[in-house]
Amino acid sequence: MDFDFLLDTLGKLLAAVPTTLGLFFLSMLCGGLLSLVIVAMRVSPYPAFSWFARGYVLVFRGSPLLIQLFLIYYGLGQFELVRESFAWIVLRSPYSCAVLALALCTAGYTAEILRGGLIAVPQGQIEAGLATGMSRWTLLHRVIAPIALRQCLPAYSTELVLLVKSTALASLVTVWDVTGVAQQIIQRTYRTMEVFICAAAIYLVLNFLLVRAVAVLEHRLSPHLRKRPTTAVKPQAQTV
Image (cartoon, rainbow, N blue to C red; front, side, top):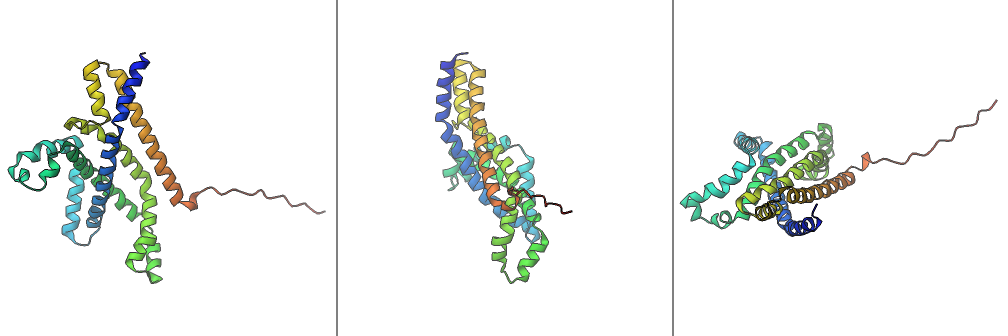
């Protein structure tokens, strides 16, 4: 095995990690904000909002992310109305199109995760909060949101891992992230195995750090689940 080539390849791929992380964090932030709007519409008492949210989730969860990316990058630019609008400032950039596609897709999944967390909040705690005179905002801030967040974290951590791996699709629209740089190296050297092993190792480390960070957050938000040290009980002496 050529270790010099592996080290050189690893160095080039590590230089592309900021691009991958930028795609991840921007799409996570935009998708997270959009998912809050979607889940609010999903639980809205107004049927128009609720059905729009249902349709959004159906479309973006039911169609492949690759097709969504191609439709945004290649499809929207074919319309003159889009090219002459302010949206073209974003859509003419491959990086922005990749972030937009990732954000729209992850918003659909995240909205359903958040809805599941809201459903998991015990109705008795909501009624207890209202009975104590809490306003709806205070109830949301102090009761509903913390419980829902704890319920959502395990499923949301899986969505974040999938989002990290989905950033690899950005290379198909000429965004030179880790996967894109790996493909460039393979085109020059024809050494597929070594290059993709290095790329896989980088994604593995990124996902490991991400899962550990979510686990720490979940631990901090769940003090009632932490193991408490047990004290040994001395047996009482029997008296005759």
